[in-house]
Length: 84
Image (cartoon, rainbow, N blue to C red):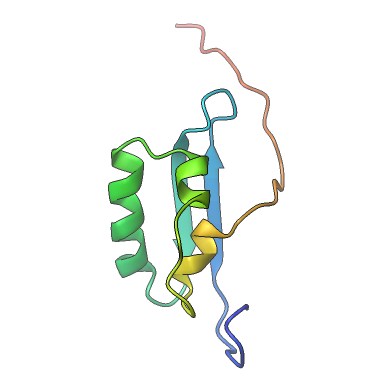
């Protein structure tokens, strides 16, 4: 809820491979998520890293800018190897 005066809420998450810094997934629920995710999908498909996201200037004030200002790790998962 960072856009001043807005009562709308969104959920956003970036999933990063910590070994390579590559963004491997992005989730968003909220207003305008379809349009925002289309742009994000292009970056992910092109192999964007978290550093690429961090170096991008966000359009202010928009919900989309949250993806390029996320700095806190909320949880880390242990990597696992599939036994095929």
